[in-house]
Each structure stands twice: as structure tokens, then as C-alpha cells.
Amino acid sequence: MTTLTWPDLIPHRGELVRYARRKLMDPSLAEDLVHDVFEAVATGRAAFAGRSALRTWLVGILKHKIVDLVRERSGHDPLPEGGDDDAGVELVCPHAGPEEQATQRERLAQTLRRVEALPAGLRDAFVLRVLQDRSSDDVCAALNISEDNLFVRLHRARKALSA
Image (cartoon, rainbow, N blue to C red):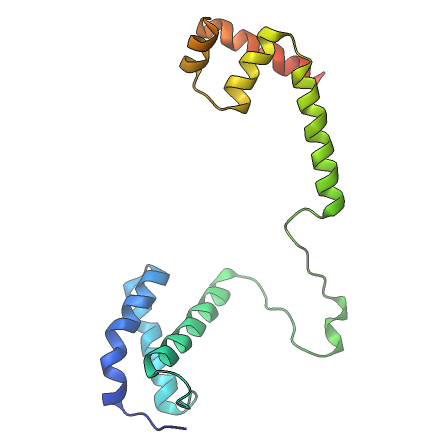
């Protein structure tokens, strides 16, 4: 463990503050966190072992401080740590599971079959405007129709698809 002094730390202050500002988008908060990093080093709560460059080590401490701040401000309670008390904790993935993905794929295939079954005028208007997300002007020009007629076709296509 290497004992660090203020002259060892001060040359890294500017880089640490810039890093924190980029991450936090708040100059005063960035200054506070860099101060917290230096305080942790000065009080011995963080000890430099020399296994990496000093700046890398300081940035690592700063990253942890930023993560702690984000967690603190997120308003969520942390998960309980260790032991068998975790048995009741259930983590939910925000992404669809395999069964739900299969269901979604089937619904998409069914919807696309229904779009293909629409009469040509309705189908072309719907595909160009809704599925390809082209502008109304582009669709009207491509189909040689008025904007009012485009809206009528889209209404009829949506009505047919929802039936």
C-alpha cells in the first residue's frame, strides 16, 4: 500500500472533474464527487496498492462514487445482500421471454398476412404510409391520389385490419 500525499493527487484533479462533468452534466456535483474521492484517499478509506496507474485508480473510485450517487437518487431501495434472506426476491427482466417472443412473432405474421389480404389500393396506401413511414406527400405522389383520398384509404385499411 502506497501512502499518497496532496501533491500526488492534485495533478489529477482537472481530469477527474472533467470526467465527472461529462458523466453527471452538473459542474458543482462533479466538484463534490472529486472532493469525496480525495477525502476517501486522505482518510484511508481507499488505499492505493500500485497495481494500476494512479489516475486509473482515482477514476475507478470516482466511477463508484457516481454509481452510488445515481443509486441514491433513483429512489429505489437496494436489493438485500447475501444470505438466505434473498429467497423472496424475484428479479423481472424487462425483455420478452421466449414464449412471449413466439407469441409476438405469430401475431406479427398474422397481421402481415391480413395486410397482404387487403384490396390493392388500401394495401399500397397502408404499406407506404404506415409500414414504410413515408410522408403523406410521397405516398400521394407514388399512388397518384389526393391527400384526402389517402386518409380515406388509411381509415378503411385500419378498419379492415381491426375487424
